[in-house]
Image (tube, rainbow, N blue to C red; front, side):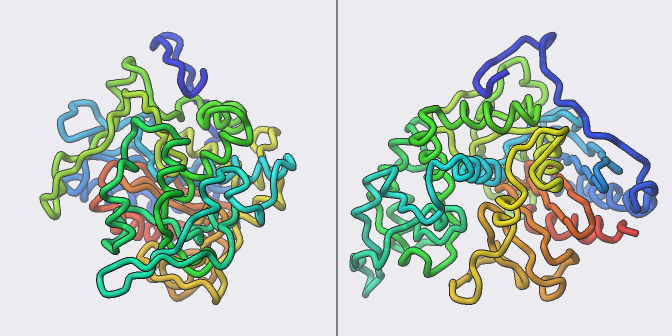
Length: 407
């Protein structure tokens, strides 16, 4: 099935499971993994989140996979192994792998200017705030594909602050799912940058622009390219930009209002086909689908004998590309971490207030989905929920509990 094709339930393709083993056979403590599940059950019982799934794999096999709680606050259906989630920014690593595949195909270089593919980016200016007004200054250098991958493009998000440039984003139609990727890219190109390309790490719509670059270079829609080159080869049968009505009973939903703040929570309709296929946050997926993607990453770019990306290309992606010269001021980047080409990367075993290994790489989604790859421990973890206000708390808690179970 393609990312756009709806099928009848009787013909539903099932994502094949990865091999499974008892936790102890993989150097994991079953007792401690049970404590992890129990901890999340307590959070569910307290009303912190409706439900969650957690999958822990090591040495090429799944040692723990549980579905906890309910699919949504109004659902009588329990959370299931095959529940469908909005993964939001966990779309970014998939699209970033797609870009690197095109680099491997020789279509462009990481150092190529974005304007080579989307000419409107050639005329951008940087917006400097001065007494409540924006002074527009010329670029010192063009934004590159590498800048987009590592979020040093100068592009921003409308929800990461309230500066004058971000206010322009907020007042635009950038969040509309009814504009095309091409229209979105031109709209972003018409906004000032937050800073000079390469100067700062700003989490941003950069990966949406990468999605448009994929369309320009491949001549296909982003969904069609991802399905052909990544999703179908990995048998990620249920990862797409929308799903069919026959899956309405499998959709995970958040509380209508945040249990901690009372703020209204409103996400897009997973059954509605969007015009914009957001490379930065538009995909839906299941826990097992994303586990297959994660195992491919942990295995150096291959799964079931099928190579998706070269080992050295993936090594480049999972390395820090910021160094000491790029300014970083964001809660998304904890101490002891940098950012690669589509992933955050742990650069030190210490400094961060949670366990991990140097070389670990990971990312997460706005609704609370999270994954990490730990090559040093030959381990990956996929966690799925739809609880945006609790995402930072649960990410740290998950790390604490998983690493406590590593023997």
